[in-house]
Image (cartoon, rainbow, N blue to C red; front, side):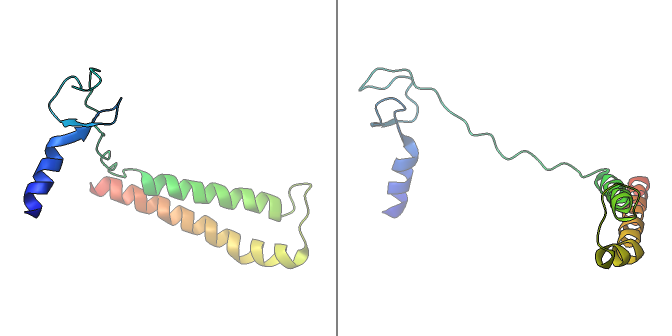
Length: 114
């Protein structure tokens, strides 16, 4: 019995103007006589293959490392406290730069392999 209710509900829909239940195949509502348009919801777009994603991400990391080095290394008029600047410029910024370069190389390797 549950299957027949589901089948009946699949054959019916609401009128977009008056809200009353009508059959799905009708071009006009029998109650308000308005033309019914079938609205199709587009399916989810297929995911991009991701080509060049790692390369661009790596370049972004390299650029971020260079910008942080510019501001934290004392090349800009903005000054940071020495407690923050020393460990950042010694360890974190070079790590960010090298990891970005590695991700870029991995992207090139993936591109050549495909």
